[in-house]
Image: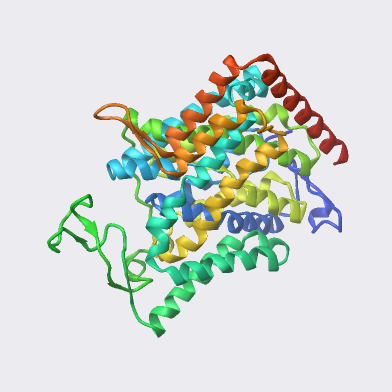
Length: 480
């Protein structure tokens, strides 16, 4: 297909019931602008929540998500309609880095290297085929890594966000539940964004009606053992509870309406890079699943584009983090918009990318996002992190992973517990593996070790599992 040569269909008007607009087709430009705006709304909640969680600039994250989306579409030659929002897979690694040294440049530099590794993996997949990756990262390991990334973030909710405002967190979580199930169609698909808005407004109302709350804000009101103010948070200098408003609009009032976000360059340390590399496995799984899902709803064979999609996501992540932005990934939320509207045109995604870039040019908007109360983030992240973990279970189910086989069971079980702990294992005086990184290494290396040593009947069980998964996938395609 021509990169920008969209064919106008349905007379440029809204399609009739059951009508479809293919990736290389479009409606009138005003209608495409409306669909592009829908994609921005769909990606919006998670795209600016996760930068806040990682301590990065949400305004820059939204802007670079637009840039990454356009790069993605160019690399896949317009064949895979997708939006690249902020990836949650790096949150655990980022928390581990910040626990050692609170450096934005080290965080983004480490993720930038992971993006380069992901891009190189995409090139290898294009050259060798997706089965080469399946041999290195079998479904048992891939599902396990995705699960431990999600569940390994439980401590972030428990220690950082939930304690800031337990009741707001609880009500925001409940709102997420209800909006997801009760609201129809498109509105249900943006339930996270709507719950966040609800929690934000509710927190502001509580400030007006009930007054300030007394709780701990990480990094604020630092005191030593004697109760005296101190500068650097650590074992002898900790955040203590104090009275504060849930929502502060001071920074919003001071911010300009038009201006660039704050850029910064990367820095690199091997120990920090190792902490975020496990996310590459999760992103390979996410992108593969995304392309297959898009192929199903568009009724096109997109398997040859899996390598390009992974390459494009890696490039998007590397470019974004090279200027201080957040890591990227393809978004299931936007697949939902396509499924609901049956508009698969990549023109809508180019427009969505452009709108996101314009949002990034409004510092006041960025300050408004950054003012999101911690209690609200607690109610949102408890759902989002759990959903990430359960995506690992989905990978196991779809690939018929057999946990009666100890090759699958033993190393994956150990890896998940090491991540959830999070367990810390000191390698040398200057280098420690912990949490998600440690769990990933144990799951991956342990699986391959056991497979190499296992007797023939356990290896045959793996082969039976693989054949059954292939047959199931073919049956799903036939039914579709």
